[in-house]
Length: 204
Image 1 (cartoon, rainbow, N blue to C red):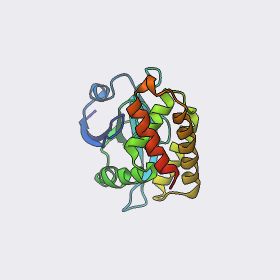
Image 2 (image 1 turned 30 degrees about the vertical axis):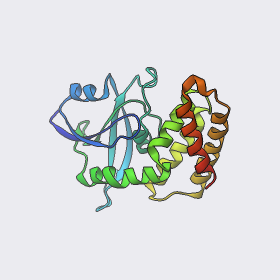
Image 3 (image 1 turned 90 degrees about the horizontal axis):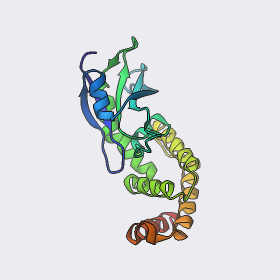
């Protein structure tokens, strides 16, 4: 495998895509942190009608290890992904290829902006969702349903009323759960910050 220009999507909140160069399986594993599996989705080049296939390499035991949620990769590939992800394109012959520069620019700007718009302050809402899952406040399946809707909206470059409604319903449910949660177990400050933020969002 020759050196390939890729994009690293890190797990967690408050992160941005990073341009990286990979050169073989070991370099991917070092970034992902374990044995890898591939997730795939087709994308479209903006300047042509030619589609290309994005390949995301992630830790194949991310769920088993309960690794940190990768919110960017989850939105991009429309499925729950844990841990860091290395994104390349499929050269069509079983080999990896460079990620197009135009797509990298979109990831760095348009994608992040649209994720932020869909999430409504993406970093904090990601923490809210993670907090809700870790403390069993709402079923993880409900969060993933909203995430999938967001991913579709990002592809279509707009937010649908259905996604807005799903998000509002989820936020209201999390707000009620947070209000009933024992703050002493997880820190009063974090719970109060989440509650204050959710009240603001659900009143809009």
